[in-house]
Image 1 (cartoon, rainbow, N blue to C red):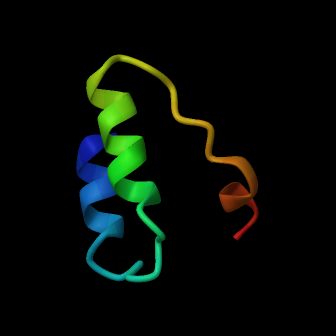
Image 2 (cartoon, rainbow, N blue to C red):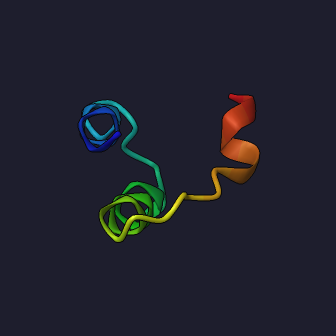
Image 3 (cartoon, helix red, strand yellow):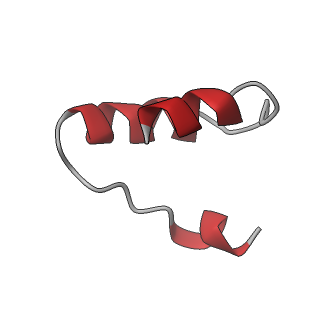
Length: 40
């Protein structure tokens, strides 16, 4: 999952800090709430 989020950072410039937030959650063993971002 962390590798995937890192890859997304290569092209998703306007992520409004979501990638960093989700990375912290995954590293803490938690499941991020992707919310409406799943609909893209």
